[in-house]
Image (cartoon, rainbow, N blue to C red; front, side, top):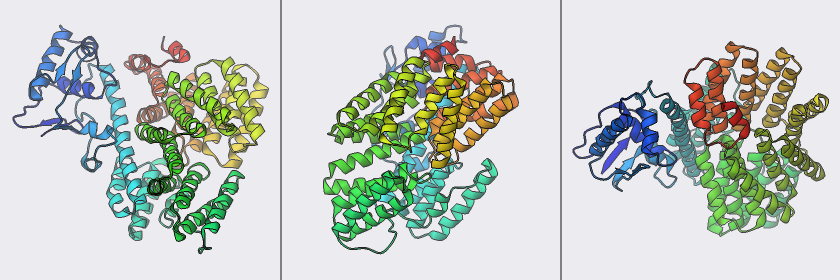
Length: 595
């Protein structure tokens, strides 16, 4: 059996193997294995061998080196080039990207993609390599987290510890990883280690980011999934009553009371040995933790995993669909695209009703839009809106419509965006959905700003800001603060703009379960504003942060915008990289920037 290792210093291991000569052969191998579609020979020659006297001849030489190193034979053929490896050959980067692969090898992966392979003469390849390094690191982290959560939900918290610990080592500044490790340790009975890990995280965040850890981190050492808020009440009727009371309280905005009721419902259903009711209570509790309580996505994910296990044992299809979709939403917000797509695909395969399909398509459309795949987003969100309207789910209809409006706004299709956001606002107000209102308010205010109606824009952003602060929602605060920064910049108040944008960046990132797209969107606006006033000292760290976040979370349009900012800061290869990355993004507004 052969092994190809591209994470860390690259190597090929099989009987009689001799590594390929030259760094470009390794670069070629990585590109062939990881490119979204098979590349043409001409494209590869331009990408890697443009500085050679005979680029296609240099490519043929490197291909021959690779074929020899891989054991000879027809392993790389055609034009476009396709690489075909035997079933007995394992490739570490493919283990990362295959959901069905055994996660155990992830614990042994160390180092970045093609560590030590740098090709200064190939700036477009270097740009691709940087993005892939971030993307693969995020994929490994996502798989580690997913494995740890599943083990905890399955009653194997002790087995989850090494996976959670590895996630912390990969991304130590992500509080959610520390929380997952703390929870694993606490549930497995090692509370002293859990408390030590809390202290490590608190010191690290304070020293590196100047932030205080959220309360959820310390709570993770005390509260396990499905914890009760009191002694059992007795019987199925009590469990059902607590479930309905919890749902009603959450819907009315009484979050703490609702969570307590849902925890009781889980406990009561467990005591009366009703798996269907317990699965539904777990799904309701997990959904509430994910949507209604900031900073509790880690606990929510564990509860939702447990809901799936219980629902599958009870053959409760509807609960399984709900829990899979909620887990997909968690991953979309976090920018973990592969795990998000996996959960949503499983949910879609189980779904049967219009309301189920509408909700799943809404989250899939959100994921596509975040990645700047606008054709897919419009198709998915449009179908979601249609199905939600058909079954009378007006909140889902409004939610999906708002994302259609956002996509049109990002594409500078202001008339279409205005019509759709107005329709969204009408639905939200009719439904009295106060918890969601700041989002379309901020979108509408930005459209008013583009239309030159500064008074309406000011009113809209201020209303969204005040309500977002009352709701304590970092996403809404980030969007509204960003808008107030844009408004200040439009009025020539550059100091005010910088202050609002800094506030928006801080607010949008203060919780570990933040919506990464909003945070990156704010960083882009702050970078643009700093560069507009030639404040390179302020712009550089913002652009660096934006580029890393966009690459890690596969936000392609924001990655292009980061490259354009880097070009303005003097990076001679960044503009070409931006054009390369933006070539397949269907956004007329972005295309204009790339000309």
